Image 1 (cartoon, rainbow, N blue to C red):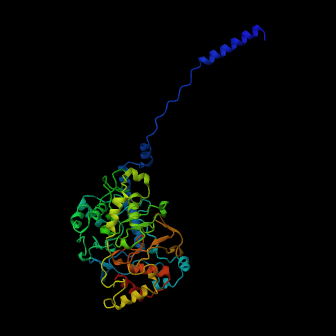
Image 2 (image 1 turned 90 degrees about the vertical axis):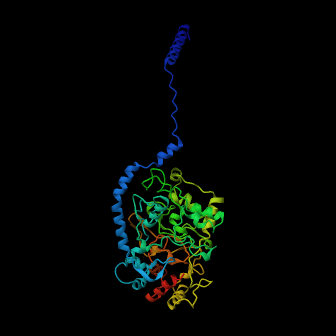
Length: 472
């Protein structure tokens, strides 16, 4: 390269360097502030509308929703008050008599029982009242309490369990007596230790301070203490008009028994497949080994903790954190609650002997015939052996044999799956029956299992079997 070329190259290089140097330096990216985790979570689960708009919308929709559900109930059942002349619950409330489920396509129960499951399915004769029962607003769900309980809690505690969007659906004469008595394994001589009262945070200490030890008394205190719940809490995502302290275990398991309160299971999705729950009694948990209608929880401690951590919040831990979940300490609080629950006894059954069978000197001929059927032709004892009338396991009734999959008011009826064998001791005190409360009376229950088990009982045999069940 000549000198002239070298000088030109150097000049060109300098020009390029100067040009590049003159370009403005790229601006450094400004760091964007990260969304705080709590704010991001709140935004993700915030209701899509204001609380005032939710109240306005849902109260406007309430009459139509209630009318549709009431029409479904009227189509399925006879809801009238037809009290038994003789059978009474433990505090004297009359037991409702007769099957209330309406038959499809005419005929009678004996004619229906003569058909096979396939014939019932093909001819669409499965009674609608034997289908799974929807929640009063299945797409919405949530805890829902009978008015009689709402009124008493409001009176004692000034805590309002009314929902602005829904009312309880079944009439009170088809529910357990209110308030139910409490019988304790440790004090059978005292009878009803609740003394005819609904036990709440306002009166539990006065009623029980002299008959429970300090641990049991603390457990009862926790069972009547209100904790936030999905529909009753202090956030704007609630179904109570005012910000709420929450619900108690004994709001559903009233006096350790039941009041018919309903909910949806938290462990099934999508929403239409969730099952309605009819609150089971806690009486006799000391002899039980499975808990939860269909969850098969292995101890009353598991059940107590599960309800607080999961069922209260529809199985949703994110909204639980927002709404104020209060995890209980397993070694103290849960154990104390379980210890009290283990004291809850079945009601007295004066016609039963120490083996849980009828005393022939006290039972009627009809009741004795019913007992023979229970342990024989009716096959009830296969799942409900004496003395407590439970086998402490799960059974799948395979009800889907009788009807095709179908949907009613947002609830997909596709069968039930495994169901816990509930104890039948004191069964007359616990209507309605089955895990979702679809069977309104003991007569309905006998008709249902007569079809499911194919036992082909006669009308007289079914009457005797009900007479025996009322003795338990």
